[in-house]
Amino acid sequence: SQKIEQNSEALNIQEGKTATLTCNYTNYSPAYLQWYRQDPGRGPVFLLLIRENEKEKRKERLKVTFDTTLKQSLFHITASQPADSATYLCALDIPLYSGGGADGLTFGKGTHLIIQP
Amino acid sequence: DSGVTQTPKHLITATGQRVTLRCSPRSGDLSVYWYQQSLDQGLQFLIHYYNGEERAKGNILERFSAQQFPDLHSELNLSSLELGDSALYFCASSYGGLGSYEQYFGPGTRLTVT
Image (cartoon, rainbow over all chains, first blue to last red; front, top):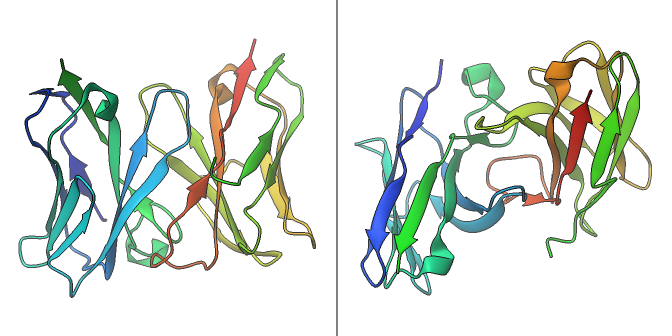
């Protein structure tokens, strides 16, 4: 079955530094990969979508890379701020019939990012 | 504000009871997804509706059912509730039903079963 791996341990980063989060997946080759932010007790919020033929996508201080050979996506937040502290989820379009966990998008469990002032 | 509304925000009920959670998708979105998120757990996919039709089921218990109405709002019915059903329930909407579409999540309904 499909597996999406994100660091289960919290990531502590000093304010102003670049935070880098990792999303690894196995087996299936998704055509799309998305990143979401989730604050405690709130619904996830869409951040970025990257296609398999795109190596990199940027939006303000956010950057996502997608390496289909390594089966890995990296999510970067530059000039990090305490307000960036949240859980970040990656999501891939792995169909249920291919072992995905959901229809449409299969979500990883997320990495908890803490930006220290 | 995602444009997705969910009611109620909080629900406290007793074991064995039945509740209905309601979701209104963003204007123009045809897909509605339901997820369950327990403490420290990831998003568990329950069910997906597209334009009124059930499209896919995940790990949804037989005690749970859902439907999407002609106006595209959706309801999730949970019956014979157990303590373990206590969780945050999210609905999300998207324009299409594929992974190429971003999902917009509602604020969630926090269900507490006592």
